[in-house]
Image 1: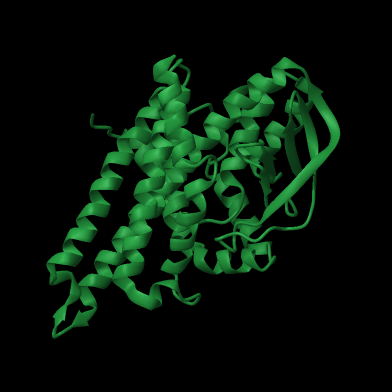
Image 2 (image 1 turned 180 degrees about the vertical axis):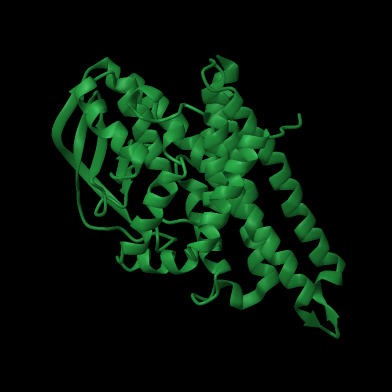
Length: 328
C-alpha cells in the first residue's frame, strides 16, 4: 500500500524539520545529557507552538486532535533529528488524561501539554517501567495497577543513550482509580508505541542518509567505499527494511479508532525497531570507529536507535502481541 501525505501534512513535516535544523539539535542533546535543560526546554516550547502536542490533545482542551497521521509526521521529524525529551510520553499522557474523563485533571493539564508550558512524562509498568526525564517534568505520572498516581522519582538510571534519563518511580498522590484507569492506560500505551515507532523510522532514515553521504566521500584503496559491492548491499538492506517499516507505521495511524489499532501499532513498532537498529549497525560499520565517538553527531542517533529498540516494548513483546491478537 502507498501512503501519500496531503499538502498540509507535508508542510507540517517540513516546518518541523526546518525548526529542528535551525535549533542545532546535537548541541541540545549534549546539554540535555548533562542536565542542562535550557535549550531543550526552549525547543520543547517551540515545537509545541508548531503543533507537535496539539495533535494528541482534543479540541475541547485547546488542541487539534487526535490526529494520528500528523502525530506520525511530527515524530518522524523528531526521530530524524534526535530531539531529547519525553515527547512520546507526553502525547501518551495526553491520551491518558483525556480518556480518563476527569474534568478537573484534564482541564488543568491538557491545555498546558498542548501549549508546551508543562513538560509531562509517564511510566506504564511493566512495558514502560521508567519515567523518562522525570527530574525535568512539571508532572510525572505512574499507572500503578488500577490507580493513576503522581510519580515520585528515584535516582537516575544509566541508559544506552545518555540523553534518555530514566527514573524509577514510586506511587505518590492518587489522582484517579478504578477500571477507567486501566482502560485509559491501554489507549495511552498504544499511542506511545505509535509515536516511538515513528521516531525509529525517522532515526533510521537519517542514519541511512549520513551513511550514504559518508560512503560517497570516504576513500579506501583509491576509491570511495560506496563503490564496493559489500557496502552497497548493506546500505540497500537498510533501505529495504525502513521502506517496509514505514507503511506499517502509517497504516497503524490510519487504524486509529478501530479494533485493529493495538495490533497494528505493535506490528509497526516491531518492524520499525528492527529496521532502525539494522540501520544503526550498518551506519557504525560504514563509518568505522568515528561513528561511535561523542564528538561525531551521528553517534547520537546510533545510540538513540538502540535505546528506542526496546523503549515502549521490545520487538519480541510486540510480535507476541500481534500473534495473540490473530489467535484471538
